[in-house]
Image 1 (cartoon, rainbow, N blue to C red):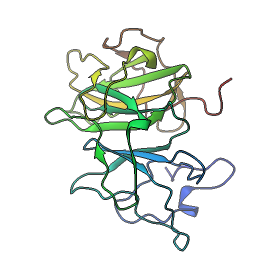
Image 2 (image 1 turned 60 degrees about the vertical axis):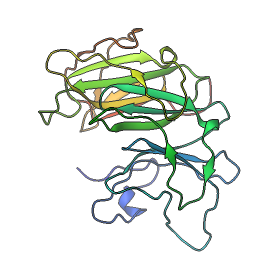
Image 3 (image 1 turned 120 degrees about the horizontal axis):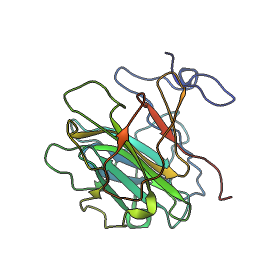
Image 4 (image 1 turned 90 degrees about the vertical axis):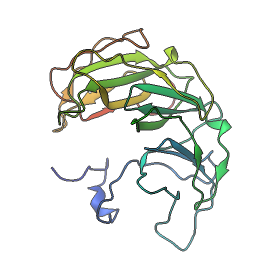
Length: 234
């Protein structure tokens, strides 16, 4: 399969030159009039980027990473009420106000976003508008297999997860059953959530489960991507 395509444009390789080991994790606006860009890392670091975009460069550093860390998600903060959300490999979800994270310059290393359990890593990070109906999609599997995106899936209302403080632990978002010990995929955003397989074919998700820490239902086929509607409130 080739690189992802841009709507109305072409493959990302036509716009971005990636070094060995690099991959695109997000497309986001850098509107100088907007609230800024937020990003999260696998080691649970969060950062909001100041609008100090250099005028003489096509690319630049946005965060100083610790050894072994990597950016797992980035998104534009769209309003003062937005939440920043982490989902971890051990099925913890943490949401906290974006307003509680001070903006930093390009070379800054960010700050503690979520306290991770032993052996866990942050799996997903994003920005969620709590004023819209939202959903959380989690897929559980086994750390001993390569079946990423397979296993059991759960769709939960975003409102079921309480807002907590930055640099705290999350709350459980998926209860593992026999043969499961890790989340292989997580996502939070506007409802209704949609899923697709590796070839882009839609994958049907189950009905919404109001239980915040309930178990999932078996997937018919693996999911590689989850997303929701974009645009302003209806």
